[in-house]
Amino acid sequence: MSEQIPDDHDIPWAMQLVVHRDRQSPARQVDVAEAAARAVVGLLADPRSAPNGPWYPAVKYWRDARIRKLVRRADGKRWADVQELPGVTVTQAGAGESGDAAVRAFVPGRVKPLPKELNKLQVSGTSFPDDGVSHSNDAMVTVEVRPGLEMTSGKLAAQCAHAAQLAWETMSDADQERWREDEFRVRVDHPSQDEWAAVTRPVAVIDAGLTELDGPTETTRAWW
Image (cartoon, rainbow, N blue to C red; front, side):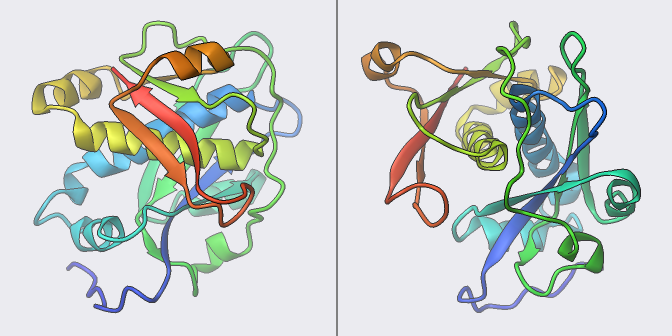
C-alpha cells in the first residue's frame, strides 16, 4: 500500500543518498559522483516510481517542489543496515588501485524525522580523493562541472545527481531507453573556463546557495 503524502510543502523533503566509505580502499571522488548520478536516475526510472507504483506518491510529491538531495556516508554495519530501506544501490568499479564507488539513493521523504538507520549518519565533511579523471569514456550522458567551484565530494555528488535527473526528465523516450540499456552510466567531466564559456547544454543546474555556495550558482550541466 502506498504511503499517504501530506499536502503541506512547507515541510522540507529530500532524497537521501548514502555513499559507502571504505577507509582502507577509498573510492575516487569522480567515481562517487558518477555512482550517485546513476543511483538517482535508477530510482526515478524504477517501475516502483512509475504511476501506480508504491514509490510514486513520494517521488511525485518531492519532485513537485525543489529536488533537494542530501548526501551521507556510511561504512561497515551502518552501510549494511541502510540497504534494508527502500531505494536503489549502484556500485561502480574503481580505477587502478582505488576502491569501488557505491551509492544508495532512497525514496524521498521528510528531512525530519528520519529512519534511525539514516539519522545516525554524517552529512558534513563527506570527502573522497580527488584523484584522476573519469574512466567512463563511452557513457551516453556527460555531466560537466563548472570550473573554479570549491565543493566537498558530497556536494559534488548531489550536483551531478541533479544534472543526471534533469537529463532523464528532459530526454526523449527513445533516449531514456538507450540510457537504461547502458545502465544509466554517466561521465563526469571538468571542462576548462574557456570550454565552459563556449557552449550551452540541454540541462543546467542552478544551486540555490543554501549550503556551500554563495547565492544562486550554476554548478553542473548535462548533455547526451
